[in-house]
Amino acid sequence: MFVSLQGAIESGLLYALMALGVYITFRILDFPDLTVDGSFTTGAAIGTVMTIAGTPPWLAVICAFMGGALAGTLTGLLHTKGKINGLLSGIIMMIALYSINLRILGKPNVSLRGEPNFFDGVTVLSIGLFLAIVAKVGLDLFFKTNTGLSLRATGDNSRMIRSFGANTDITIIMGVALSNALVACSGALIAHSQNAANNSMGIGMIVIGLASVIIGEAIFGAKTIFRATLAVVLGAIVYRIIYALALRVEWLDAQDMKLITAVIIVCALVIPSVRRAIKSKSTAKKRTEEVLASMEQTSGGER
Image 1: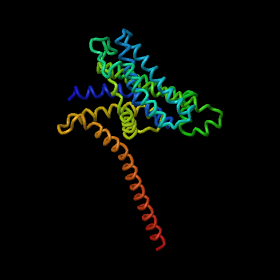
Image 2: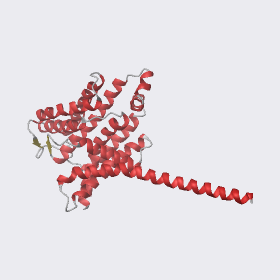
Image 3: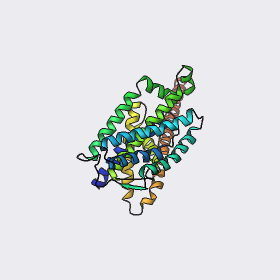
Image 4: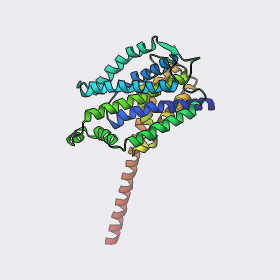
């Protein structure tokens, strides 16, 4: 049981980079980017193939980061310069990346066994924790800069920020590029941790990323950027722990995991609404009691 939970925490820390990338587009930019399913595999493909070719694993992961940034940039260009709907831009890029990733890999499945590994000499837990902290703190600092504030303002009200002379096209491209760079980096790290990469490993990543963001916000809140990014990292870990526990249930198989993910997301969305409803009901009841008490006091005074 302990080994299973440790593995879930390790995976959660590696997937946290991907969840942070999804947070940038869906929460900060309010951009429904589906490129994630393709860029995750792009990162895994670049990281794997370059490592096999003799590139140091750390450099291969950096190149995967850059490859994801390029994919995100193209999505941003399709939306801003091509005037294509944001959702459709992501879908187009995701479809294109399927063939590109297959070209990079050369075949559907590539093994890293016997090759140098990013985690050689270190534990996945330690390096995963370090990278998650660096990414979280880096984003916190970035969002406090003028560029970061412009990014946040673009997501909140793009018309207003344009009225101040800001170029929202560049801001959107930059945000989507950074998002997919983190996603691709996560893909490369997952490929190294699993010692393999395949052309379909990115399918459903957008759902996992959204689940991590929603779970984190529902449990830990997101009133400030610091708290929101922390919630996303912790949400990714919680999601993987729930995933690991679900796999231990005897009557559930690996083929049921997509259904479990959907149930987790529904619960994460419904629970905050139920909490608000209960709190609102409790507040209304309290106010009613106060009004009745006040009326009784008034009537008593009149007597």
